[in-house]
Image 1 (cartoon, rainbow, N blue to C red):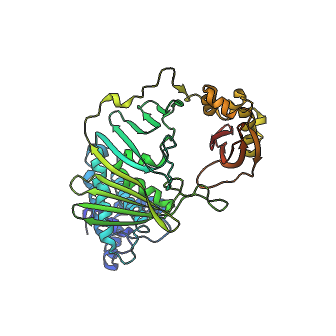
Image 2: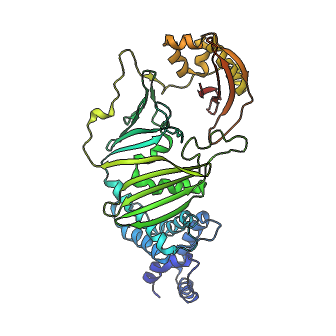
Image 3: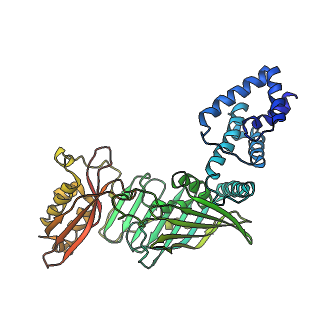
Length: 443
């Protein structure tokens, strides 16, 4: 065996399925060739650092295709800074990582692994290629949710609400809109507009759309789903139907529900759900998508992608939000106000009590320290002032955690001056670097 043949077959030494004869031939070569042995030892050292402890396998065709693809790319400009051994490390590592992601996820124990894995690999590769060519995107979809509320909120008891999404590349801009709520990313900042109530300018890193961000890169859904599957332990199924490839994922709810199921089924990832994606076999692009959640032993459709268009002209005027007269953007890119030690030493129940007392007294200075957005809205609305003025606190309950929410929920009951009462859970959190308390919602 010469060095060229060894280099082509070396990846087989990292495969549990290698035959004894082939292994002996390869090992015999490196015993007599110090150059190849050194390269093998270096790659082996690298792989021991990333190889999972569990036993995993991938088809020989999959491994060969990955190895050949990287080898063929070594002379291309994007690989000019890579040495040969690093390309081979990447090749074998790709086999290991791909198998690690997909072997536990293919849901049928009786399925032909090589067939399913090859289909998954092909779908992933083609989708990435399509993404590189994508210039614009327009989508319409409907979600069972509430007008004006957070984009991640779902509610099986609500009607479907129509949503719209626009995205443009170079530079990247996007906008998602539904009745009562709009989020815009203009490539420099994000903007949140809640009709006639709130207009915030925020950093690009702010997460305002949660799970819906997967739609911004539909051809990367396989990658996004793959990452989520590491924690969700989802079951994957890939099927061919006519001229489409259908990817179905069944996933368990993420989050902690030991103390309360309050947040269960409040968002897609906080529900036991089934996600169904269909890709066109000609264009390799997403053409339909549905999400079902399981509740009370029933399956509910809560998300339905009704229309998606690629590479159509989108006017720059789309990526603007025209505020009503009298409203301006409140810049929230500046650091949060630093709270006093008195605030920081309070527990969540104490913060809830202080918040409602300041609301009752219309003490917007105190309220703005823990609920600046709410304070800003109420202070400018006379009807809201009259509604909350002189409210009475009937009870503040013991706080609890639920789902993925990083803060706590505080049960409360209040009484308005007209005699009406309200019972809900106030969401509060202090998971920022300053440990400053903030009222997130539940009013």
